[in-house]
Length: 249
Image: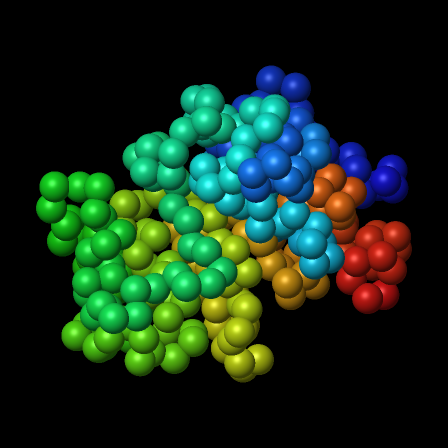
């Protein structure tokens, strides 16, 4: 690990993050994917995880949301341990999650999909629905349209909108630009930036590593299920070892 790229491996002494992952071991069944992973997200921060295919990036995301087999270490959110909680419990803590694949209910309308984002409540909060429509006006225009008939970019907006229905403190995004036409990728990143600017912390796994690191506050590079490099996004982009090993030079 380079000296420069590793200097932000953890937060300064005495500073607590919104999300703190420590020495995490996790996987699926008997298959261990992550080994000793550390990661922090401060309140309101935008953090990106990059790395080669099979590095364990999505497994980190799923582990935070309670979708993997916990094998050791800890995950705390707002000071509470969540590494052995179920997703429906984690949602109540203030975390929203947008998976990479199958992230909308294709047979339901746009509005029904958004209402599903608030299924843990007794009734759908109209102010949350209004806030999502204000953020993504195209969704209001297609309120009654089946989600499966939307474009890829519109489906990604719908998936993010559903995750925002409970006004989470932290939004988890797994490969939000995957499958989008090149001309839509920047627009998607811009929307994520605005969500973050409005105060929601973002933890994002992204294949478009250079652009993701340009936009984030801090980045983590994973390889073989372990931390390889951790630093400010700009510092990682400027690090020769990171560029050669993970960013194509």
